[in-house]
Length: 432
Image (cartoon, rainbow, N blue to C red; front, side):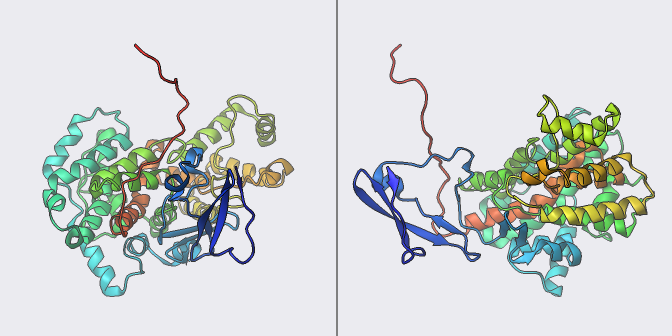
């Protein structure tokens, strides 16, 4: 079996697949950023063959107008807007609106969306009792996934009414309540009373209030700290067809409701290979500091591929040169530590590690550059957010992306339930 050569004439039309002398034309699909894909949707029907792509690394699972990534050039855009511009000029709520509804909000639209967020920020009082059923050491991500799934029980009209009429309200409900649930799970884990949200505070500052304010004593947060956390949420708001987003779309394809689909995404994000990377960076830096090894000694162990020694926060599955979010988060990290007057030995170690690795041919040849996770954990640590809450922060940031992808799939033409194929490698027929 071989693929026939393709001429310059039909580059934008189709190619041919030659199988045992038979020729099968395959359409070529070109995206708005000139990404080219071979449409194999009729391959099995026409040839009785399927493709094998373990992990879907070379498979386009859908068409999407939400996020564009060029991993070779280090480009990330939400709805066409460069991530650098959004991180500098937009708030998280403006970015969320852009992802969910397709355009940056006009002033009146932004005010209305903020009102919806304020209206939906409280959780049902009966839900507060659910927290009592979790042990004190329950993983926050387990609580988050459970409580988000529970939300649909307290909003039954969403499950039966016309989704179009309730979508904006439910998008705001999920975005608003996820911070209330997240903060409540943290407060329970440290034995502190749960704080109610405040309508006079913007989204990110309100979350920090629910996390850290004492009873009858509001914790006033520096605007630079709020901005840094806002940027972290913006940088994590969407990232195309990653593991958790693909999970949301997979579940949504069965026509599952928004809450259930997002709860599945939270569970996927919980995996250490996905949402736990910045936690692993902190663990790596802490272990290096405690070991007393020099940075060069540590990197030499990496190059020798010594057992149990891994370089976390470098490289990326998609970005083959640099992660465009990394420089933004590095600058925010310096600002936060300076504002808080924190001399964090982990930051000094991280800077030395980055500078040394970026001048080492071993890492240069392999295009191993710092990614967004390398510095985000240090910021969260400086703000006072414990490592077990790092992935929860990621989930809060990724919420608008999950909502946008759920909506895009549900409103697409002729939506089908996702059903990948497989190549069976087990036992052949045998009898009992």
